[in-house]
Amino acid sequence: KFTEPKKGNGFNQFKTTVIDRIVSDLGLPANRFIFTPGNHDVNQKAETEDDDNELTQDLNSQKKVDIFIHQENVADRIPRIKEYNTFRDNYWNNIHDVEKYVYPLQLGIKIKIDGLTVGINCMNTAWRCYNSKTDKGKILTGKSQITDMKDFFDDCNLRFAIAHHMPVFMNHFESGDLVKVIARNYDAIFYGHTHEEEGKYESRPEGSCFFF
Image 1 (cartoon, rainbow, N blue to C red):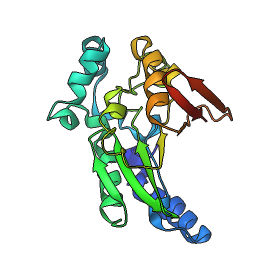
Image 2 (image 1 turned 90 degrees about the vertical axis):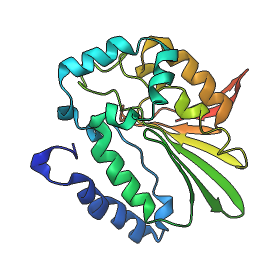
Image 3 (image 1 turned 60 degrees about the vertical axis):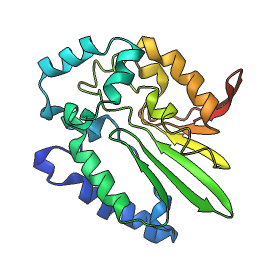
């Protein structure tokens, strides 16, 4: 849990002990290490349980989630992701050989690899995480994290996304729609959280996508 005060600046420790070593040992440019936050990367202590419950009650439809995400002060409304965003932005601000589109929640990057333009949406599915025991079925992504990036990725030969949580972990009113909009916009999406290997290729009316 990199944001716990007793562990100091855990994000910078992660960069030194994990990112820098992997990039160096594999001989990769820094722009090839792509990351996105999980439930252990949000500072749950930045908000009270009452604050969290109030936001849960307010964000009870996809329309309300999209409106919330598009507020100019949305970053101020989600203090639990402040430390992660600071680390994320500092990291990518020092990498100049990629195109970047920065949102308070997601980060879009475009990289040239062997003559191809590869687009990667680093989605934040952890911004509503508060209690790992009760998060499933309660947390949110917001399909705007995907649709807002459509024009940015329009010229890409390959389009990927990474996210910590699978759609099944989201609130019931958006989990099904997320699968559809992901299939419509990406060639593949890569998840974490469950610590289990599971992959499938789906050909849907909306599009074909590899879910791993």
